[in-house]
Image (cartoon, rainbow, N blue to C red; front, side, top):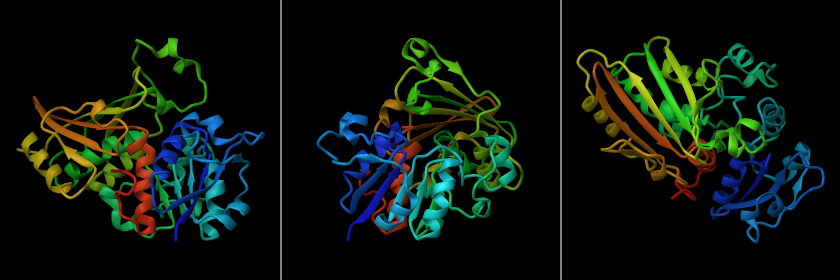
Length: 337
């Protein structure tokens, strides 16, 4: 019996990548796509890549109708708007993978401070599994709602959390310097991401204010025994997709890059999507894949931990399908390898 799927907010880049992955999934039937476009366009008008692959029109979001016809919904809706729809879906037995930040943070006050809105479903805060299977697989299996991680946090938490947990690095003075392709800013037209504005240029943004900072701090803190001190700075680079995160950390007494590499290799030895590389990783090696490439080098009194992902796949839609597979009892790698 196939699983009936809805994608809410189906017009963006992450939704396109999600649909491409789901179309490869042998246990899935996509039955509903929603958007705010009133004229109900055919999906091929919105995503020409799907012409001849999927015969559906985008429809106005009707939660009650979705409850009647789907088993799982993927929410690609904006923050707050997502939780408003997710709550009644989950309450009525529909499983949900939520791409927004609405259920990632464990503290309502922290969420409302960083996102500037009142949370629509505060009772669930802190109770929803965080969708990094490599670290939280047991909580994800058979869950009814998953908080799909942010792209930057994925690139920082996966390499650093095991090093914190095993006492290889301290939680003080962590610097996460991340570079991302332009698709990370979404599909809606914005002047800073217009081609002449961002081509042949690189710039930092959200310096000290990016909303992924508390997400990174939260999960590094939970991996250790004290509060994580993290400076996170994202940069926009003129490429379509990919994230390269360079993390500068202090080792604990006597720990070296070789120790860090050993921990990463041991922690992730059975993980199908984690690759610990002998050379610094590059974004082209993970493009269009769910892989995470990790590397550690020594620089003076610090370790330099490098992480590479595709922001649209492991940083969003690939992780969502990985979580969906675990939630529904399918092989974790289905449609991803």
